[in-house]
Image 1 (tube, helix red, strand yellow):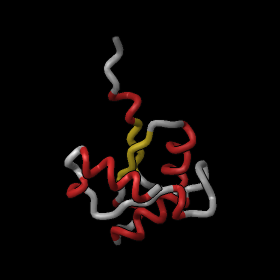
Image 2 (image 1 turned 45 degrees about the vertical axis):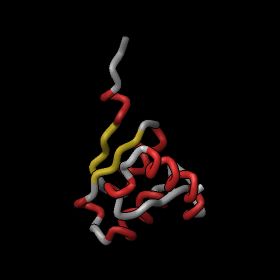
Image 3 (image 1 turned 120 degrees about the vertical axis):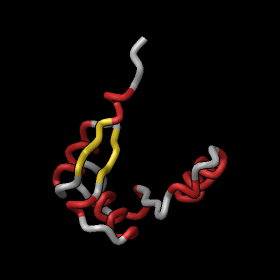
Length: 81
């Protein structure tokens, strides 16, 4: 999965915007457990209270809030037609 995420980000020409990538393959417990967000914060070396995470699911939002990160619900950013 990491390779496919890397490919997508590279193809979109945005890979350089990410210091680290964490995927479901990197953790034992899936959302709503906060493990994926803990792994991401650890990889970039930023304390949880200074992290902002973006999500598009209720389980993801729950996981972000469980560790005290600022949660951004990207569903609110979608243009409704």
